[in-house]
Image 1 (cartoon, rainbow, N blue to C red):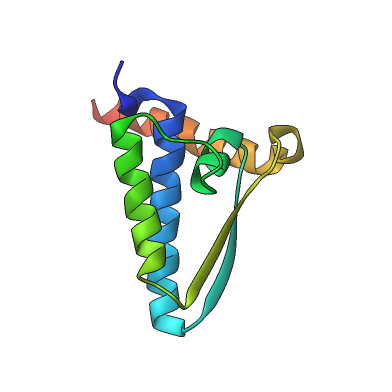
Image 2: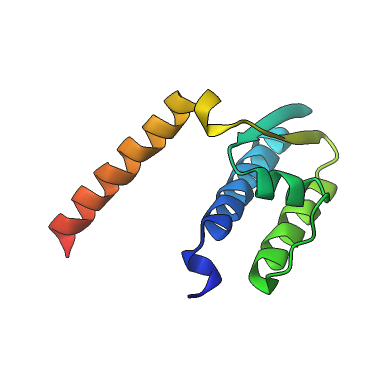
Amino acid sequence: MGPSLTNNYAEWSALEEAVEALVYLAGEYGGLEAEVRSDSELVVRQFNRQYKIKEPTLQEIAWRVWESLAMSPSLQVSVKHVPREENKEADAAVNRELDSYLEWFETVK
């Protein structure tokens, strides 16, 4: 099982995409402060450098995220943990999108 099949990989990839979008917005509109919330306590602690990242692919993603933030001084991003039970609406929205994608994918196979 490779890193692309893990929840940690998916969470880091989503964080990377969010940071890319925030970097773009900060470049277009000037200074920007953003708080990213995640129910993945592991990724939050890894991002905040409280835990080491052992998997090489995930290390690469993390370094790209940190480098993007370092290169964008007008952007301030914090990443906070939100327990899933306190994040039910967002969790339900993601599940609806995933279900919709799977239904679409079945039609194009």
